[in-house]
Length: 95
Image 1 (spheres, rainbow, N blue to C red):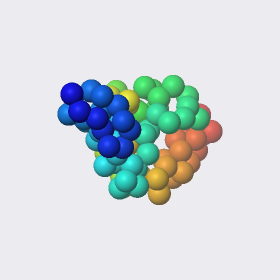
Image 2 (image 1 turned 180 degrees about the vertical axis):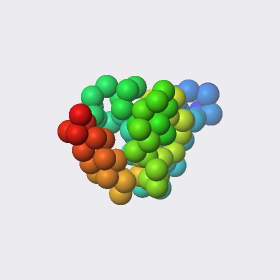
Image 3 (image 1 turned 120 degrees about the horizontal axis):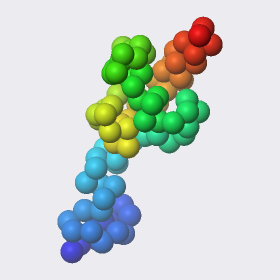
């Protein structure tokens, strides 16, 4: 086992945060999709990223990394975060 230079965790050659690509995504200006719950439960809000399960696609033209099916590993670009939330909230207000 070795120690991660960024965290000091021992877990094989890298810590779990490094092996998931968390650092590379955050360093490139992305944040975890599920950092907050302002849109409700994230497993449901992630359906709006690509319009899965008959939901409206509010992610078009916005930058995401990861798989919307796994909202734990999904990232949204920090510059697109507010726009995505605005789109979803506007849709909910119309219902």
